[in-house]
Image (cartoon, rainbow, N blue to C red; front, top):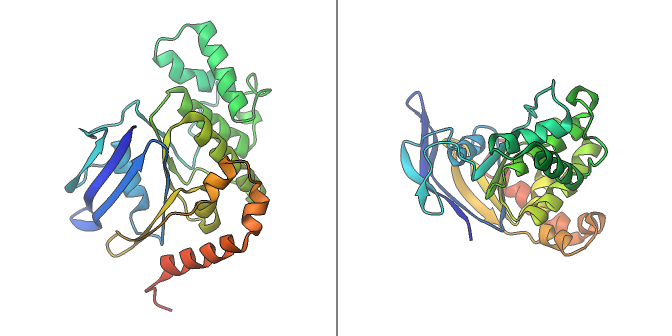
Length: 255
């Protein structure tokens, strides 16, 4: 099974410590979510996993191999969709397939399959500027999956969306995780979002960033097993978990 490991990672910017000795591991069937107050190093750790930031200490590996640069085994989706506005949705998704040398007809077929997976089966011919924010983010996720990565690295991918769209996108992410068999490492500021999505939540605290707690909720696996998301959120256990996670995030913060 694929395995992504950040082992005792320390990150400094301009000589100042941003993260100290943080360890995180993600297996191929995990959905790991990083949460914490601003300045705790969530995105910095994600960037180490992506090969965009080199730690001053510690090791980052994927399947035992050191991570030193971006690679096709990891696909990154940011808050801003970073799509090509002059291309259609299908062409955006097919771009990664084009880089892999796949023939045009097969590219189009596979792109349409991925668009259907993100519930955009009828949007292939639309240009990016014709799509809503939520639809654009779905195209970005489909494009990431086109590379058939072992891991998806998601940096606040739903942060720019309105509340209703964001809630719908949470179930889309869970559906993609189940269908793609890719491990996920995600950054979010949303407490409920973390609980809905994660198989494991890693809580970081600032000053410098460090891991202070982990939680292993079962709500995402309950959804994957067929339970309705509204029933999950209405469960008293969900409210209890939300309170415990909130306390863990803000523990030690000055009033």
